[in-house]
Amino acid sequence: MKTENVFYTDGHDVTVTSSMLYVKKKWYALSGITKHNFSILPPDRVTCFALLVLGGILELIGAANLISVNTVSDINISNMWFTANQLAMGVGIFLLLVGAIWMWFTKERYAVSITTAEGEKNVVVSEHKEYITQIVHALNEAFFARFDDSTPGQVKARKRDFIVSGR
Image (cartoon, rainbow, N blue to C red):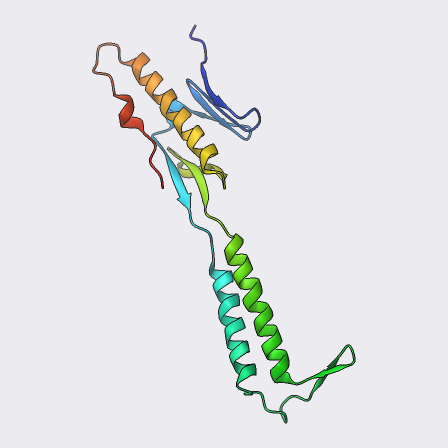
């Protein structure tokens, strides 16, 4: 009986052995994985851009005094009177700040992507590039070890054929 070599474990959710990948209580047989790679998932910044555009438009409307005094009367907030144009400028500045801060803190994420008979899926996703790189490297080592063990009479693959690439 062959022993299982553990190539990587984070002690919780991810373990890579010589025959299996374990992720969040789900096992994937390495023999069923046809491809694995390191993926970069760009952040979804559509909402950030929408806030920036809306904030800019409101700021311009307020600064150009495009809201007629006859259309909207002055508004009392905390015993202070504001015109609709002043409120538009204030809300515009607020939306610009929220959009800019949100965009600043939105980061790209990294994933271990595998392809099986069920299709392609990102099994581990993290903001930590090193963590994902370690898992992909362990998968490379596990596949390389399986290839070495299963092909005694054939030409062996070189380790450099399994190098992880990323930014």
